[in-house]
Figure 1 (cartoon, rainbow, N blue to C red):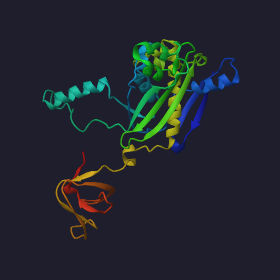
Figure 2: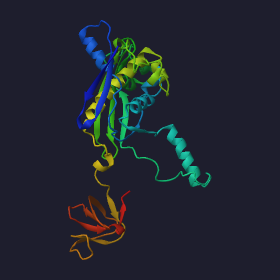
Figure 3: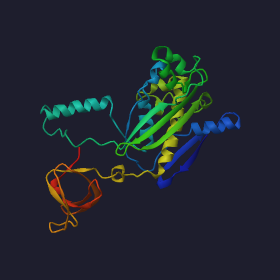
Length: 315
């Protein structure tokens, strides 16, 4: 029997969650399991575009698992909280097509070219916690340390094969401002494996394909799935107040003066001069505009208006 449960969040972001009846575990385990095995959160509005980047330590290779990048993409796409952008191997193939278009090799009307690729608002990085409570060979750190070195062993010791536990992290960074919007930890263990996700279990449904079948086929892989669901649910809950238009919420891009000009007090050629401007100067738009004029400030705080005709986006 499945019971529907909704989790309210700020800024009208709602997570729809369901839980399956639990076995006769002690209350503390049952509470933990219910939380870890909650359904993948579903958002009522999209929070922006996201690119998923795999961590550098490649801890999954010692477990014969696929990169967690694919696993996280499945979670994100099922949740509807973000639009997932491809910045991996698929994107490399896209770039090849664009190179063909630029060289004139594609058929007319293909409509492949510049200005079409969506920008990522956020970068999402899945990793595991860096702790080394058990380095005696029963955790991933102990197994990988022999051929990856002690540092790598410490990095990946958040997963224990003997006790079937996993502690993972998800971090979400803002592309425009470099701010870390959220960092969450998730936990999964073998007491959670009596449950199924979305009615499909681990062997099918959400996790039976899409490059993540290696996770659904092993107990430790299933535990890692649970841990990431736990971390992702916490992450989305934290982002309830996130602006739905990340580009608008970020500061304006800087502009460069392409030729000598004048900073004026009003948006007019007759406006009183604030100061002379040299070609190549970097200016900071305030976001206000009036016809062909844009309000800017310089590096020492002088504010005024300049013509758009003399401005270009800073590189």
